[in-house]
Image (cartoon, rainbow, N blue to C red):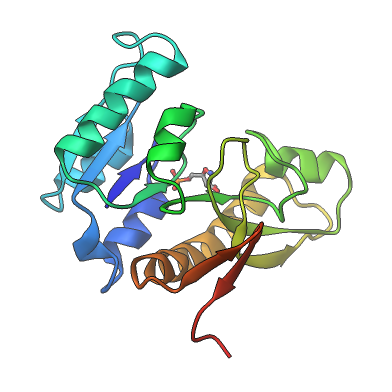
Length: 197
Ligand code: GRF
């Protein structure tokens, strides 16, 4: 499995720390050389690669370089954990049904890079976390797991995001386990979790 991350990598850490998921992680890729996620991987002895967007300008070129790296490492599953770059369709297609993303809202509400800020700006009463399979549209693929997070008066972006992240760190390892255990069955746009009565 490869985990792609651009930032702090707290979700990556939750995955590394999971008894089932941790040993699956063979590669961490970042598009930012200074991403703390790379350091988290290295300190666990996991291969960490910076893929420089300046050296591969454009989505197609970056996607081709990413795909070559994933294929070279015989990667079977791709997990996006705060990866702030839209994947080329070629990458999505090559890993169809085998790519997960985590997003800090109850999709399809508030897709995009500022989900927490926008939920606050709309005066939403409930926010949450969505884990979904990745398709060619941003924050759009079939939903795997979801959990609401109540919004409280006086919330700002930082403290609401912190409560959301607590849920993320619990939900993402669960979802990735389901993926590697082959328990996600797609029917149209709906994911059924096998063995979940
Ligand atoms: C998470 O909130 C995730 O939902 C979003 O990006 C953030 C990444 O955080 N896609 P971290 O780097 O895992 O701490």
